Length: 312
Image (cartoon, rainbow, N blue to C red; front, side, top):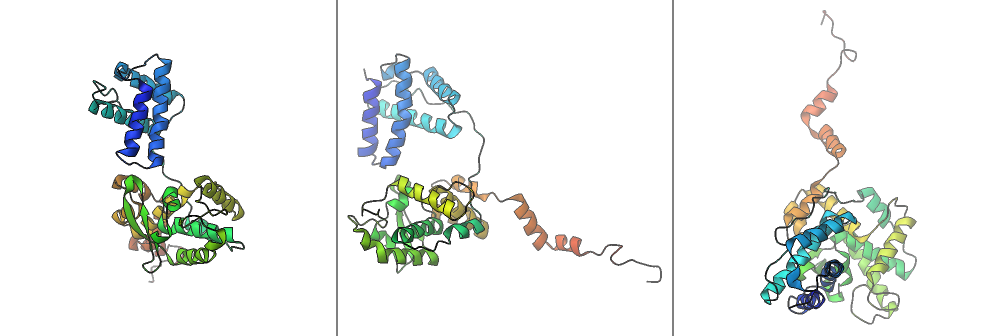
């Protein structure tokens, strides 16, 4: 018989050591499976083989009542399914109780973005100290290349190719991609690299803290919020907002869904399709400005503009 707690620990070790998933991914599985462990303890389910489909439905219903959204519940189900697939392979379970169970459908929410003017306002930083120079380079690179926070913090010096004007990024699932770096981001990075040694870097990460160590995600998040306030942006800022803005602006300008998918490192193009939204008023303005029949309607003279008489 396999106890639930040790089974979860074995599964997380398997994800880390055998499947070599990133620490962030393993940590996410661990958080989800803690909900399963707490549920089992509360309901006196000590062994994995005791868990049945109705228990999983109870767990999902409980988390739903406590406010978990559809995506969180889907992730929880995926974590439980993954655990029991592992246990089936190890012959420590007879069934996978999460198979066939679906999370409640949630409202599909579009990602928030900054518009182009807001991005220009945010990036109009006149750096007056080394930390501001570093932060400007970080913000420019976020928006120039659409990186995730973890991807940016994991960049080493050799990942930035100044001659080819690109960065080599390791994304989710250890998938590698090469992303262009725009001219303004290149200049900001060049300014930062000239000052980087002042921080006495202890490692070769592209961005380091004031003490020379690797930057912590919370530091970047905090600095970004501070810059948002300082630059007069009227909403809370976070790194993924810049990634959303990069994707939305690029897709609006190019219409190249596949290209944006490659740049973002999305495995499924359906994930990229959320950025195909455009404000209806924007589309209406484009139509009015460009369509011949729309122009004809606006330019057609009215009776008061050019009255018609019998003599004409």
